[in-house]
Image (cartoon, rainbow, N blue to C red; front, top):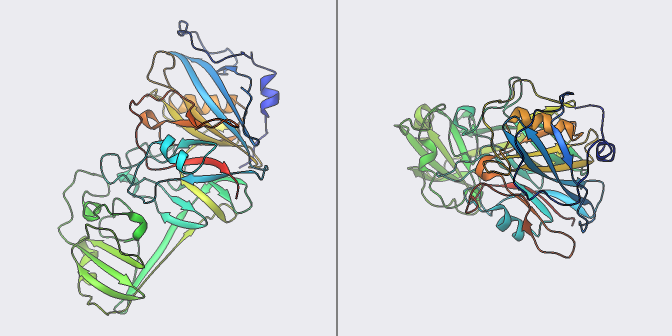
Length: 406
């Protein structure tokens, strides 16, 4: 994606700087600036940042009241820091951003994907780290989130390529399983919702949570009945080692569990231990150079402008990630909401705000009670930087973190 770049230094010259974060009650609502900008104030850096990072706060006045936000600017050209996926040990585990960030020795972090809250805990979108796919995205109709603006891809990710450059693109799943003289497609990897009539692969990375509920619901309705026919085949070293009901415990090390539902179940059920089974998959990134890290996201800003058709009806806390045109600067962004001092933003307002900050491309992550940002200043302790609306803090599936390189 390309756009004219507006640096933060240039932006600061055009806004009023304040010496400290705003703590007083918000003033009455005021109309947005006549030039269409929504940004009111970008605060000066607080100082004490770890080299390669810079934390700031900003404010804006939306139609419904004041909005407060937080930025961590990351210099990806600084080889002392790196951006990595933040996640628990397994796909079905969850944790608060402070807990996950502390385990990763993070300098800063935000929450990530929408996820199967109250269910398996697994995230909606792609998780990709160390050049390997951990999980693929679930069917569009089974995502507890808006599908993204018209014309955007449901496979959108925010990523870091193998050269350390930030990228917004797509990660696509491609896989198949060969058995009994046939080859059939795999629908995905470590999915909390196996598509109707499909087969999905599960690895030990799924964790110990039952896979039985992954065959419940339809492609469009999570409350639809569980599949009438379902089977699991465990595969090790290219051979079936067990055939039976969908498993309720962790996949053993060195094995893959193939879960089939509806019409795809009968052919797999005919297998016997010892029969050859070859399951293979890969992740394709058709829009970018090879990626090291990628996280599922919603399209938000491209070419210096918000995507047309962004949601305009619900103000809420928001999390986003922005990139410079050359991908060498990344911003972690959190907007407070659902509180007196900050009403939150619609996705359309978030897009306008990010473009006002001079950020030419960006994606949105999970928001609402999931929005959390943490920061660790140089020589200091990790602490929550924003004011989350969920108390106690919500446990989430994953996030994006700035960590010491190496």
